[in-house]
Length: 271
Image (cartoon, rainbow, N blue to C red; front, side, top):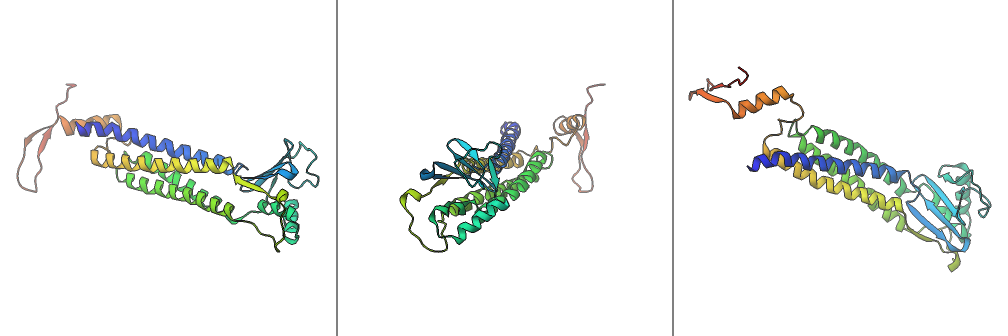
């Protein structure tokens, strides 16, 4: 009775795990292309800066303007955001690094920083291991040992995603310094906080961890049930023959020697 319940149970848990992995990968992909990884507010200039992994946006008086716009208080609707690798943006960043003006300190956040590179690097491996996990998970009913590889793949997927979150949070908590220490007035202070995309990536990490737990459960149920081979790799005819051989066969002859095998007769109901 317990084995009969384990057979549909491992399939249900396996499907739930695959759904969680797919949801985590889609959430990760959406967060990578969003500029809302870090939000910097400049109350003095009535500006809100959105810092993404490779592109940034500035909102001033409710209007999106390009980062390289020399007059930030004028609205231009044709350009909304700027890439971190834009030559104009790179020129502004070089000026900020060489200047002692504390009002330009916020421009340092528009660089392609190490924690941005780390998130992209680990995200690539998140998708690689996640794809491997989906393939091995879908094939585990055909070959039960695949379920162990499935667990390892999802573990690596979860580890890469969590490492991305830890490195990014640590990188954003570090204070950026100019070449020389200068006094920064209170009205020139920049208020930084984590953005929506960062929290979405953390949500994806939680989905991967839940997928890992369900993958372990499905692997245990699949191996302990012993019925994993009756899965997607067999045709209906082969499945019926296998089932009848295991349950409906009658042993009519047997011997104790190792060189001979029992003779099994399967009754054909179609005759």
